[in-house]
Structure formats: C-alpha cells, structure tokens
Amino acid sequence: MLTDLQSQYSGFLNTPSLLEYIPNTFDPFLVQQDVLPSEEALKKHIHIHPNEVLGKRVEHFFEYYIKTHSAFELLRSGIQVFKEKQTIGELDFLVKNIATQSFLHIELVYKFYIYDPTIAASNETGWIGPNRKDSYDLKSNKLLKKQLPLLYNEETEKILASLNLSSQNFEQRVCFLTQLYLPLHMKASAIFEERKPPIAGFWTSFHDFKNQFDQDAVYYLPLKKEWIINPAHGTTWISFVEILSQIEQACEQKKSPMVWIKTKEDQYQKIFITWW
Image (cartoon, rainbow, N blue to C red; front, top):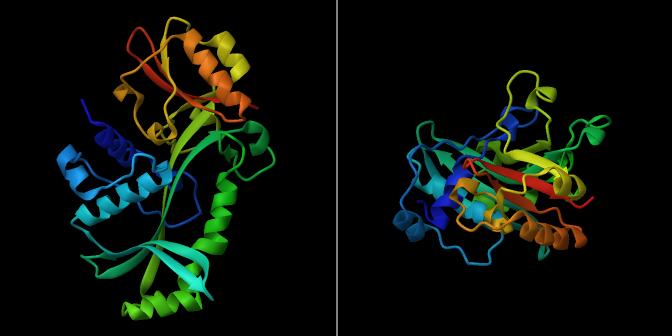
C-alpha cells in the first residue's frame, strides 16, 4: 500500500495535460515518469507543511520531478519579480534541457474542471471550476496576457542578467495538469472529436445525488489536499446517510465537495457534488 506522500505524488504524475487535447493553445510541457520513488526518497527531498495547500504541494512535486529527472537541470523556481517594491508576478520554473543545452521557462497549472454544457454553448470551452469561480478561459487568458509575458518584463531582465541569462534564450512551456469531470452519464465523445482525455470522474447536483446514488456503497469526503489521490488508496469509508450530512454542510457554505465512492464490487469513483 502506498503512503500518503507516495499517493499524492503518484496522483501528480498520473494527471494528464489538458493541452494535449485542446489544440492551438500553448506549447505543453509533459510530465512523464514510470517509476514511483520510495517514501524515503520523497521525504528526503520534499518537505511539505501538514497544512500546505494543494497548489503548493504540486509545486513541490514538480520541483522534485525536475531535480530528479536526468534530462533537466533546475536553474531557479518561484522567482518573485518586483517593481518599486511591489510584486508584479512570479516565474514558476527556469529549467535547462541538458541534451540540447536549451532553456525553458515553465508555468505550472493544476486544475480541477467540470464541464458545463450551458456555458459551452456560448463560450470557447465549457470547463469551469466546481464552485464556478474559475474556468479554463480565465486561466488561459491570464497565462497569455500576464504570466508568460512576464519573462520579457524589464524587471525580469535584470534578474536574469544577474544569473547570466537572457529572456531571448528561453522557450516557454505550460505544464497544464487537469482532472476533468463530466456531467453524470455524459461521454467524452460528446466534447472531444479525435483524442479523448482520460476523465477523472463525474459531477451532479446534491439533489440528484440524494436520489440517484447507491445507498449500499461506502463513501469518503477527501480533504482538498487529497483530491489529487486515486480513491483506490482510500482507507476510511462511511455510509450513504453519513456522507449526506457532510455534503449538505459543504453545500450550505457554497462549496462543491469531491466525494469518493467504493461499491460492493470494489469499484472506485470520484464525483463532484455541486452546491448550485
């Protein structure tokens, strides 16, 4: 059985890049690694505070991935860029490709998106955050207009010069890792014509969840830092009645919780229950 840290790192490695399936966006940087490190190796290099949010955890995982990958050298990470003592942005990772001796500026994104057909009817994509506060369109616009252009900012050039580097030597990549969730009973073929990404799970309203789901299955409400994990690694399960009260509390706070489901046949599923 995997440890918590191994389970989270494994979830990171196995999250697909959305940019492989949405054409004409950004040059993707793909995470690929077959061998899962031991708990000892991970603990030696990854130091995560128990309360550290999921986004920061993923940054730790990506940094470890680059540092331990034979093809890359990590130059810098989390470079804060200031102008007149005000932060104007941050460069996620500066990396050297050892074989080609080329330089990469990599922006890291890790998102959970659900597909809303009502938005897709009028927008470029229908991928939004479970609480409707985020979307692929918003994030891609931020990348295009703010995060990637930061490399060429005058203040950034000063930082790079102090490292004997220049923005003109860098290629830019986006590592856009995404767990995708479809409406219950919708198939990926309804959205993607050619290559179909792996779907992490489904979503439904609290009302439909109460009326449609298996009362003989067992359930778990993971903490957000656990959302990255494969539910097969879960160890604590509760009844349908017990999970309903937990979901209701989250929905009352206008939060759409993730729920793990384990059936009697030991089949596992991830699902978002929306408050709206």
